[in-house]
Length: 281
Image: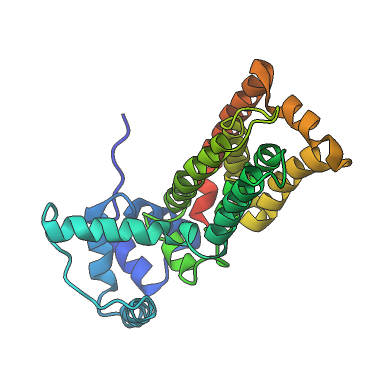
């Protein structure tokens, strides 16, 4: 059994003065994410150096930009601590459930409901099912990355950032979009369209595929590939055949089994690429 590796005083000193080789520095920084003892040792080595002054200035600027004041860390288990944890969770999920994406979700759901219940479009559920799978994909694209968060580089480099932050924001997107769109579909006249929940597996598969491709190409590009591929398959080349193509894509056990396999494959790919989130981009 291998012995647990820890940072020595010499390594901490070399890291503090910048003389530690870059690969060793990367290894040390990764180790600090899970080792409080070593983090304290490195913090003590950095304290009093030129880097300490720079880090203090950066921390002050970040807190000022976020509109927060420096406050003591509350004791774990206290009521204030629980409130602080909820606040951090809401902050982490924030970009996912605000702004243009939330407006777009409400427009899609409200527009489909208006068209379906007023008789303006008998195939309103069909149109909703064609668009629904790309709505959470758009939410993921707009919730993670430098374009979505002015503090992205800072947040992504923390132990709670990167992969965990992307999953938190994706969960927030799914928690809002899945019930809203599914309930909307259930309230619309069927008119021969697939079941209201038939879009859930395709939507989940496209979302996980976007998460897996995001670190490789950027989230906006990844979402354009996954969402664009779905829309091209369903809507092109003849919009008049949407109902038939959608039924082929969503109806029946074979189609849903294929999407379930796509979900599993996308989840495995995402798990294999989770370390790519350790790099900010």
